[in-house]
Length: 322
Image (cartoon, rainbow, N blue to C red; front, side, top):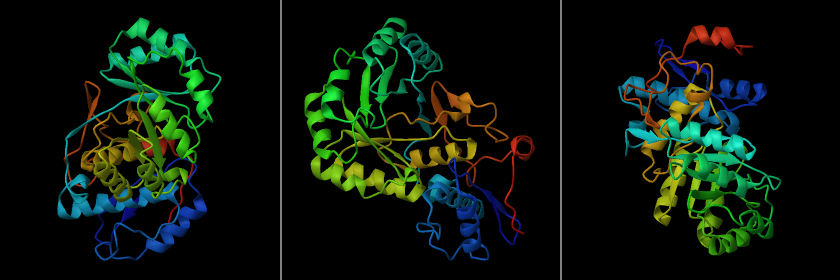
């Protein structure tokens, strides 16, 4: 999306996939004519989380340009100017899993994540990866709650190479807090919980995790101020986090870098890697990677410019409001 002020200054944002055109129009109508310096930047009048971040990003892009600071400064300031990153992939056979991990290692990544189900031989994945990569890369297994219960998780983790494992993320249903606690006590691998606001999860989900001490750390994604709040809460708990993604385009991933930079405890490699797997990220100058880390833009606002020629080339439709 693009938001243009009366003075001609333009800010850009990016929704998540499957954004509702009706919700977009509703948000556009609610913001049109508002004074950007008079609205509450932490609580915008946008209800749908699949599109909220797009409007937040565009507004913060504008504000950064107005006061001539990068977005991470508007979020309180940066704790780091480069963000270690990792990639992730869908389900693979053992040979493909080893090849994907090896490719990530060659790009300088220290970590790589695999989606999986209860039908996947994850023990064989770790054996193949150890054989091809040695100890050169650590792994996260992310069943997205598809291992369902404690018994299934313990069975599937039998024989997994714990030495190259970094973490297990969301193996069982989120509501099974007791199951998370049991797994954390039993497994020799740290257990992480994903709180994704665009998935209609609730920021308050972290409260149950803290009360039960059910996770070793977190994966957060969603709007900037809410994710910073989640990170601060986790920091008070003494836990680290990383910035999650949906393999987004350049605007959203750049915003993710600003959020990761401004989150005090975002010290685990973030899965910001769309730049590395897409034909075009729709930016004139894309995210710069060095040895597996992404450089946080230092220019005002987002610090990147939308490639309008690429937008015209790849665009399939527009919602235009004068």
